[in-house]
Amino acid sequence: MKKLIVIAMSILCMLVLIALASCGHEHSFKTEWDGDDTNHWHSCNVDGEECAEVSDKAAHTIQTKSETAATCTAKGSKVENCTVCGYEKTTEIAALGHDYNEEAVAPTCTEEGYTNVTCKREGCEYSEKKDTVPMLNHDLQENVVVPTCDEAGYTSITCTRCDYSETKNPTQALGHDFKEEKIEVVDCKADGKTVVTCTRCDYLEEKDIVPALPHTYYKEADAEKGTHYRVSKDPTCEEAGEKMYKCQVCERYPIDGTNNLEEIPALGHDYKDTVIAPSCTVGGVTEVSCSRCDYYGTKDPTNAAGHKYNMTDTAVENEDYVISIAPSCEEKGERTYYCTECDALAEDANGKSEIEALGHNMIVVVEPWCGNEAQIEKMCDRPDCLHTTKEPSGQVIKHEYASAEPVVAPTCVKNGMFLCKNCENEFEAYEGDEYGQATGNHIYSVSVDDVPSTCSKPGYTVYGCSAGECDTTENRDYKELAAHTLSEATDRGVVTCQVCNNSYVDITAEKTTESDKICLGCGNDPCTCEGTIADLEGFIEPKEPFAITAGTPLEMQEIELSTGKTPIAIGGGIIVLYSDVETTFTVAIYDSVDGEAIKTFEVSGQGAMVDLYQYLTVCKVVITATNDSSVSFYKVM
Picture 1 (cartoon, rainbow, N blue to C red):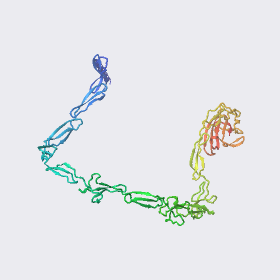
Picture 2: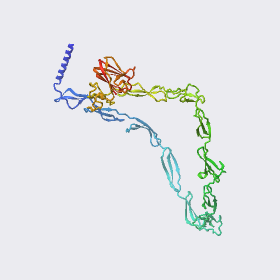
Picture 3: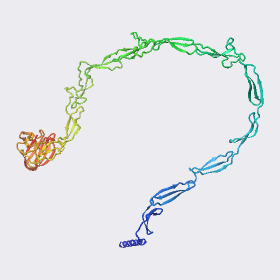
C-alpha cells in the first residue's frame, strides 16, 4: 500500500513539473472568445504568446439568426449563431424539386394539342409542353348568297368546328325594276295618287297624292238609326251621349272632327222609392234608387222600434224566456226574455228579471246516537247543495263499554280508549269511570336537553316523559360543578369568583377568630365594611367544638348547633371549619346517603371552607384530618 502511494505522488509531481515547464508564466486570459464547432472559451495570452490553458469553457448557446427557404430549383440555408461568443455556422437546405401537375389541352383547327406540365408549389412558374398532337385544320363548307335589289351577292365560307368565316366571289345588287300605276280621285272614298312598285321585291312607294272628295252626310230629318247613323256613345242619367252620321257616298262612318257628330241629351234618373220599416235594433228609412243606373240614396229616417218582451205571469219558459242563472238555496237566479218581435235574447236589464233564492230544503240524515254528542244532523236535499246543520237533540247519550279491556292503554296523562258496544266506535274513558283512567305515572326515558355545569350550579340531563301527550320533564344525571375561578384573597381574607361574582371569607388564609376584623363581602380593597365573623348574616356555630381523630372519617349529617340540631344542607350556605392545630382536611360531599361522593378536596392549614351553594342537594359531608384536633364549626347561611 505504501508503495502505491509513493508511485502516485511521484506521478503527480511529474505532471506538475511538466505543466510548469510547458507554461512557465502566470496566466492572463483574453477578453475575446475562441472556440470550435461545439464550445467557446477564453485563451491564455501573455505577451502575445498563447498557451494551452483556457477559462470559461462552455457549450455554445445556439439560436437561429436567419433562414432562407429552399425552392424547387434552388437550395436554402439556415444561419445559426452563439448568443455568447458570436460563433456562426451555416447549414445548407436541399432544393425541394418540382411537384408536377399535368393537364391535357385538346388540338383545335388552328393550334396543336399537348400536355401542359406545371409545378403545384406556390410561387413556382415552371411550365413545359409535351406529347404534342397535330392541329385539326378547318372543316369548311360554302353557301352561295344570290344578289337582291338592295344587297350584293357573295359566297359564304364557314368552319363546322369553330367560328372561322370568310366571303368570296362578290356580285353587285340588282337594283329595283320599277313599275308605276296612277289612281285618279273619283269620290270621297280614296285619295288620288301614283303607286310605284318593284317587279322583283316588295318595294312600294306612293307619290303625287290628290285628296279625296269631301263626305256628304245624312241629315237628321231624313236619317234612320242603324241605316244612316249610329250611337257612338250612349247617353246616361247624368252624361250626354253622341250620334255619328254615315257618309251618303262612301257609306262609312269616317272620323273627321265633329262634322258628322251630334250630342244626345242626358236621360236623367228614373227614381224608385223603397220604404224600409224600422226593426227592434235598426231604424227605418226610405231607400231611393234609379232603374237605369246604380244611383242610391236615402230619405225620411225613423228610430228603431226597440225590443218588446212578455214579462207577465203568462210567460212560458223556453218560449218567452230562459233561465240564464239558476237560483240556488242561497243565491238569487235570473230570467232572460226573448223579444216578441225578433226572437232575440235580451242583453240588457230591460229584458231580464230576478228569481228569488229557493232556500234550503233540510232533511234529517243522522239521528242522535252515542257517538255524535246527542245531535241531530240535517242536510239540504237539493242537488249540488252541501249545506248541513247540527242541532242539539236534547238527549244525553253516553257510550257503553263493550269490554273492560281498553283498545288503547291509558298513559300518565290520557285516559284509555275503549270500544262502544252500541256504535262500535272507539271513545276515551269518561273521567271518574271505573275503567281506563290516566295513571299519572311518568316514564322519563327521552333525553330532551343537556344543561352544562357552572361554578354555582351543577349541570344535569333533562328527561321527558315518553307518553306523546305529556310534556312533563325530570332533571337527572347531575354533573360535577365547574371550579370557581377565585381571585387572590384580600388582606381581610375575602376571595371572589370571577365567573359567578360570589365573595367568600377564606379563613384558611389566616387565623380568624370571632373577634378578628374581616371583610363582610363589600369586595373593596381596602375593605370599607369591616366587621367580625359574628356580624355575618345568619351566622351559626356549634355549642361545643368537636373532636376529630386522625384518619377517622367524621360524618356530618346533623350537627348540634347552638340553635339545636340542623340538617347540614338546609338553606345551602357556606360551612367553615377551624382546627386548633395545623392539619390537612379531606372533605367529601354527598348528594345521597348511600351514593358516591360528588366532590372531594383537600385543604392544608387550620381551616377549611365548604361552599354548599354549588350543589343542588347535599345529604352529608364527611371530614377526615391528618392530625387529632378540636374543630369549631360555623355555618354562614
